[in-house]
Image (cartoon, rainbow, N blue to C red; front, side, top):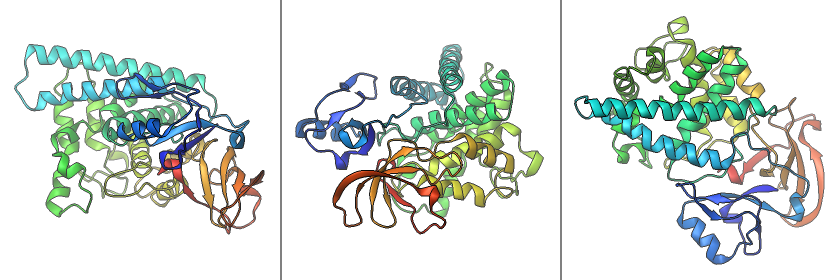
Length: 368
């Protein structure tokens, strides 16, 4: 099985897993043979990656850390409940508003339990990159991904369950303040003006003001929204906190937040390749991010999971066939096209076996 971009889809390919719409209904079932009509339908639903099964990927298994049906349900729930909570900032608190927000928190706690169950059941490296993606739900998918990454990192820190739950809730809610920012600014394809950037930066304080009004939310969770853009060198925002002035929860969430943000497709830029995103975290280790959190994050994340189609710097194309825990950016690859972009009899190479970096991954189409 492998994950491909919709641009690579051709009639006759067979789906390896079902594809869901944003309401959790199955658009196309596992085993469906794609047609031009089906491919066009998926494009209309903004689906741009999918699992397929073929001879080239035979024997390659994609392990989902967080099952797709749960992901769709969670993103849908986050979409609804974030707006419920954000509404507290647009009107005077009412009894009904507080009741609705309490229900929303219970819903988020259900999502956390699903996350924790998936993480504790799965002993492999966390794989969120090889998941089906759609273009139009970034904020909600991002909130879920950051929650999953943050829970994994919290567990790696050896924190007790109560603190892991608080971090997970803080991660789901960390960007609730962005719902107060006009979409034309959030989705602006070009560079933000100074005034627009200052408006975006307000989302941390706005999120804190919203969350601190909800009695069911511990104050530390509210501070996750406030501090997730603070940096250990004091050059973050909104308060310019540094070092131990930043709460431990926020140091965890900030690493997860940046990694997911830069590896996601945005209207104003293409995503980073996963190993480049990890290099970004390392370049900020001890400056923007706590060293310990970057190291723990690296050890628990599968940045080139099995089933991803990649292009190498020498022109060859292949499918990641085995994750390499000792060299996370250099997995084993099943070559399916040669340097001239011609189909070849599949064979395996181990990128970690090369002494230098003359051959490296330069493209991963399902991650773009």
